[in-house]
Amino acid sequence: KSRDMEEVCYFGLIRPGKGLEAFLALAQLAADAAPQLRFRVLGAIPLGQRASCEQMRQAAAGLPRLVWDLGRTDEEVAQHLAETGFLYLHYPDGASERRGTLLAALGNGAVVITSRGPQTPPGLESVVRFATGPAEALAQVQALRADPTAEANLRRAGREWVKRHGWEVIAAAHRELYARI
Image 1: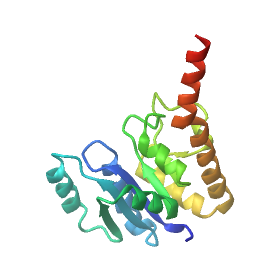
Image 2 (image 1 turned 60 degrees about the vertical axis):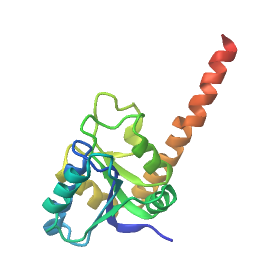
Image 3 (image 1 turned 30 degrees about the vertical axis):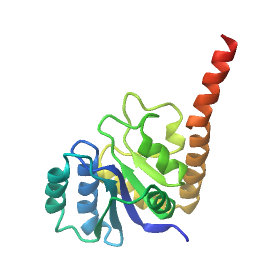
């Protein structure tokens, strides 16, 4: 199946402070500025967060073309990440190598638009597009939709980055270190 270049996805836990608020603001901006875009919240609700999730859903109830896709299996999530056009992952403290959602998205070939922070590793700018907020994120989505070469290059770079920074590489480096010691 091919990529859905009209879909922008949020991926992660559904709770306050995880970037969903910025994603919903992006969907609101796009309602008028980019009506061809559709938005999907792909995530899970942690224990004790059902009420806050319901509040966010109610606040976003009037947004056109917004789908809440919650509680999927790991395989279903991976499949959707492999098919979606773009992910907007606004981390309040910035993207970093400790973000499992970022690694999963990049490993599945998703184009990620995210935020920069103090722990953002050097070289990530060749793998993702940075945006300080929803308006910049919308501009990045529109620019990448107009430039299929840049979009394809980001997908390829993301997969390669995960291979170089994935758990297998980290484990091998630890084994090598222990062998030297």
